[in-house]
Length: 307
Ligand code: ATP
Image (cartoon, rainbow, N blue to C red; front, side, top):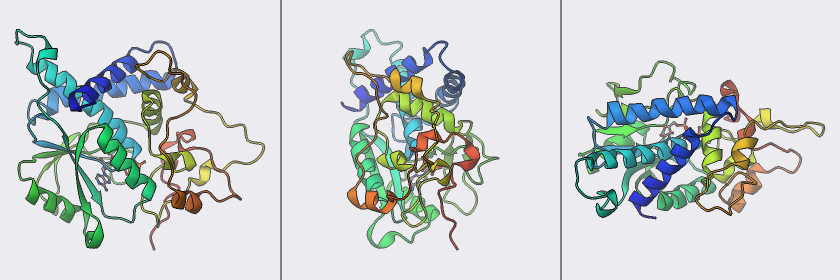
């Protein structure tokens, strides 16, 4: 698929989720969350910063939050594209989509899991991202702010960045959907239309989407940091007598697909790299997959605090 096609696919997927009726309470809450994010993009963000002429870059690290937001961003870009054609005499299919790749930035500043790096690479292809990767090699000590400064030196046309941060993330309780960076950061606008999302909303939408998600979540990770500070979430450890209760069975069974014969049987996860498997999959311990955890306050319990 090219960028126009994947944006249209994400639009169809989002519309399909919004049309679900009388399923579960988490689905109706997530539908409200999607509607708010969509209004933020279409009414507040795109009239000022167009996603079609490289004023916005998407901050992407392959994590679940930015992936869920990316699906919605693409969906809204498709709607925005259709709006720009409103007065055209010709059907949208006769108009070429104006962008080939979506500007995206990945600050690869920590020692990342190979599975995550591989997932960033495969998902970048699927979503037609033009991925600027900072970090790597000898630049890994650079701070996030300096990495963005460098990116802006290469891409001075960028005015704003979409970020998949949520109010329940550390230091995010008082953030706003649209705000300028703090004084100690390079000057740009932070676009944060995902703040109101809860963990359960993220899983519900991602699982229904049927898009491959990073395989590390399947090993009990619930938030992915560096290799040195991320473990399976201790609240997902399984005792033999546990009968785990999954909140998203409906989403698995009715997962989105544009092909009629696809059947939803399991969550779609990317392949885990053998070295990561060895590191995280300790035979003495068993963990449920990350999507069994829906308590926002425990999301980062698998992150080891740095001394
Ligand atoms: P998870 O918490 O499961 O790892 P996530 O990485 O999407 O998911 P956070 O770690 O809470 O979520 O980060 C919030 C947002 O900040 C991301 O969604 C992304 O937009 C941005 N972000 C975080 N780290 C990076 C990075 N290294 N490079 C680019 N963007 C990043």
